[in-house]
Length: 231
Image (cartoon, rainbow, N blue to C red; front, side):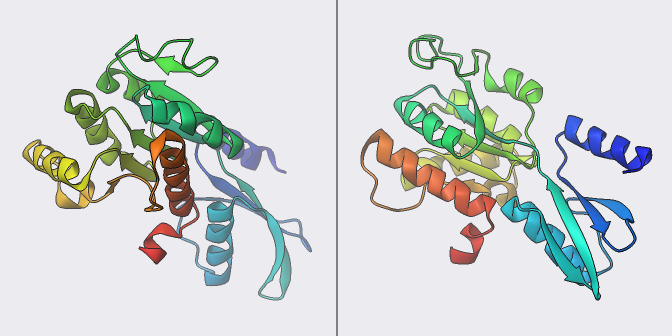
């Protein structure tokens, strides 16, 4: 790999940008493609986008030539607003699926070491913590407190970010009130529509553990490009 390309790859990794390194095996020619970058060759574009979606590198034939597409996706991250029982059930499931969790809750009695041993926690208000935590295309965002003073400012930040998933706990009635508040705060209908609420796939979940399963199922469907297709 040429030094210039390596520098681009290292910079992408340091800034959590998904990139693919494409190598034409017959010539050794390489290029770096960022997620979302326009690619003239439709077959290559489709293959790269599929690699980003599935987290899979592969060798394939494009235009009669063998090409190796090496996907470099940043680690997945799960940002949870609210150190509640559902978060306790959600974190080990998310960790098994490769997510790095972080819990944000200014209510220190909830976000204790005893309840979230070994889990990164931030006791600041979300509007203080989130700019530092960072929200990008490999981040799923979940609001769980049921408290508008905590959830609403966090959701406003998430809706204007690049996170691939936004979910918020609450019934349809609770979410309708939330929509009214967010609209009054100046968020557009398109931005608000990004919120999955009531959160999680409708599997008839009862209790924190089953709700956590429904949430991770919905997050996974969004990550793999299946949620919109089946909605």
